[in-house]
Amino acid sequence: MAVGTGEPEGTGATEPASSVALVGVSKSFGDVTAVDDLTLEVAAGEFMVLLGPSGCGKSTALRIVAGLEEPTSGTVRIGDRVVDEVEAKDRDVAMVFQNYALYPHLTVRRNIEFPLRSRGVPARDRSSMVAATARSLQLDDLLDRKPAQLSGGQRQRVALARALIRRPRVFLMDEPLSNLDARLRTEMRAELAELHSRLGVTVLYVTHDQVEAMTMGDRIAIMRGGVLQQVDTPQAVHDRPANAFVAAFVGSPPMNILPGRVGGEGGALSVEGGFIPLTPRAGRLLSDRGLREVTAGIRPEHLVVDQTGTLEATVSVAEFLGHELHLGCRLPGGRLVTVRVPGTGGSWRTGDTVRLAVVGDPHLFDPSDGARIDD
Ligand SMILES: Nc1ncnc2c1ncn2[C@@H]1O[C@H](COP(=O)(O)OP(=O)(O)O)[C@@H](O)[C@H]1O
Ligand SMILES: [Mg+2]
Image (tube, rainbow, N blue to C red; front, side, top):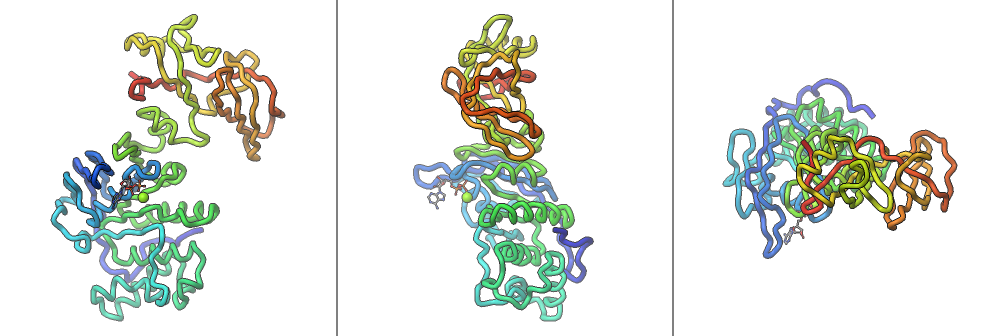
């Protein structure tokens, strides 16, 4: 759904977008280190996604930027200003949560204009600002309804409108789409991305959903156990994951991760009763490091069913998705790997024996710490 074009009129002066920086930020709750020495810079106007599994410290990091949580150590900057001593309400950021926190007894109009009333903006200005913001989010026809009379997506848009009308320098969003059903979530992903590019605002967006991260982020910052793992564009994170954790977390279906032994015939990697041929370059990377064991990562699209394949497997499950097929294949050692077969061909059944070939070099990770092995 389109969200209109051009800058809405009458919404008051637009604040320039601000950069955001966390520098060496840590936060402990008793024994739990929720955020561990996090340094992350979000450029002005950038859409940065904080991605990671539940409990990895995403919300805590966001709340620290908002001023809702005080870090144990470290510094937060918004634009050029260090805001460590600045109260939440004076940081000029807007936060949108998973539960939209609308006032149930107020109409959509009153909900949207709430931040303006509390700032003492005169009634005439309020009304034109509400009209323009509502128009940009296609809420014009809903202004006199109460939240209970809205769908989940409409409520989410009202929450966005209420945040937008303040013209904050930075948007902080904590899993704002996770209460929506799958179709609406896809729609709102597109709307948020459009809104971001139209308004040029800075967004720090928290999610555990790698599809949201990949589709919306200019860059993605992946966290695990409070520790930042990698910050890069979706493409770079996908193509060159910094470690085996990122490799397995980003991508759908997930990357196959297999322990391997170095030094098979012709420099091949022995895995699960079969082998993966390596290019001379990959062989050199491994021999330079004197590694005997290595973790191999193979994306499902880089495995193909092929009579000349070097891995034997038994089809465990065939999932047909319309435009492609996902084959779950059991290797002799017992591991399950996923093979992504494009198109609608193929008629494999559970129990079929197949051979799998690996396309290109696998991703290689050091089994001791999971770090990527690369030039
Ligand atoms: N107020 C709190 N008191 C105690 N522990 C907390 C508090 N807030 C968060 N935590 C803990 O900090 C860790 C990170 O939490 P959180 O930032 O909410 O993770 P995420 O948003 O990635 O799911 C978790 O182990 C969580 O239990
Ligand atoms: Mg959270």
